[in-house]
Length: 218
Image 1: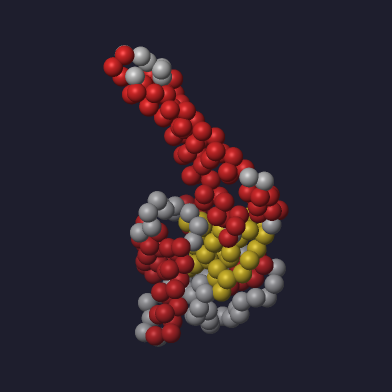
Image 2: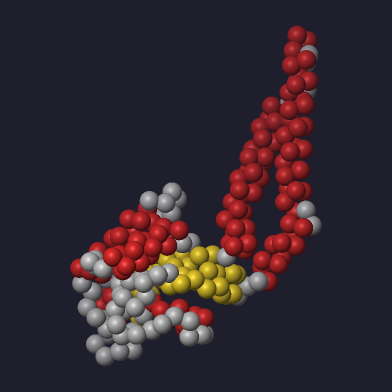
């Protein structure tokens, strides 16, 4: 994508190396002054102003912290942000995938449990690369194949940068919905530092009997 190209070009031009070189250079200067003082410790000579050393070290720590913070953004530009579409069976996950891709990529039927495995596609949204993943509907089942699909869906929830949680507004919210939501949040909280990134998608609001207003209030 356009942003990926810009990021790669900056790397090629040495932007990252230059930032690291400046941080390293500043630390070496502080280190040299302090080492010089140690060499002349008996003469009680101060080569490094303590306030200046504190400021330099604080600046170095901030620059290192800022640099580390760019890792996630850089990873997204390189690999794409993983966006998982999850929810109960037959809530419209595959239809949403096809709509985002503007292509008939996933099989859509009225039969719950049609999707048994994950389906991943690439998408460019305003210059940012995304990896859109359609998942199997999450529910309790005795079908071994479908159980494996549910297990893979939960894995995608754990690994995704963003989770689109799809609800069927033409049906009443029931205990199975709440159970699936609890599972999703539980899985997300297992990942260190990931406590959000779940977006509710209210689907089928155009159908008769839509619970859109009630779901919005909740």
